[in-house]
Image (cartoon, rainbow, N blue to C red):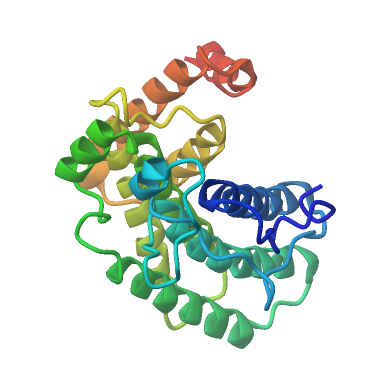
Length: 275
């Protein structure tokens, strides 16, 4: 539908709000397309190219636009959380492609995998380093974004980043995997991002306006918990208490999330039955 409506091109007769709305709808469809294609093993439908729309405008500036107001120029445009999210999803596309290769290929090319993971790891770190002070994750920034109405968006953005890092390095948790030059370091990074994911959930829970109550976070929390469980079973004994506390925190979040999303019950009920 986004392609049929040609939302990427816009219309010169539209005012600033309408043009920005079309951009935001197109980029939202683009993000959903990437996620859906990964979850359903489907071909992606939307591609970025020369005719792609401008990235979404900074959130507060967007809310300040008035009906009939002209569209902002490129010099007046300012990046916001959504625009960073689009840039991040471009990296996730490449992570998805790597995961598809791992699933579809019976004989892995370890040099190719190592080179690909190394390149993506560097780019993920560079992406995080480029975030301005107002966008890095901290308790102060959670409070700030909660007050300005962008709390859930801010939390979701950072949970997504931790998830992308986890799935990139997840393969290196496998003890039977052939040893590679950076394998141990990548396994540690996977565990680090699982812990950070838990920290973000716990911090955001202190602010109702920033709590991550999206349905997709049930899936991501399970991924985080599986990494934590691996560390609980095979990690250092000194980490047991902290890992157990994080697993319990993740479960508390899942129990709360199922109040809003009945589908989460399918995930939580087996855990309830076994406890």
